[in-house]
Image 1 (spheres, rainbow, N blue to C red):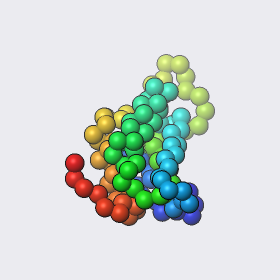
Image 2: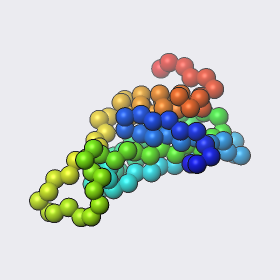
Image 3: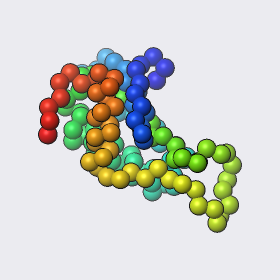
Length: 117
């Protein structure tokens, strides 16, 4: 992650680096500060689905690590009280995650050629 290129979007940080394989690989970093387990798992499901359906066959052999940014106001450490509601970074849907991820990858110039769908 230190040696590659990175791009920021409102919800994501995308790191790319070339690899020695014949295909691209995806890594995910979704921390607890994003939200509760269901929220984190939804982010991971959506990002994997976008990669599988729209990116996997159009990318050169690179490693991509996608980190979901922490929710606003969720930077303090320690446990919350049981009655305290902490904010979550909610994933609005597949289409918005797809757009955000593709735009971030375009900014790091990882696409050789991308066509409109």
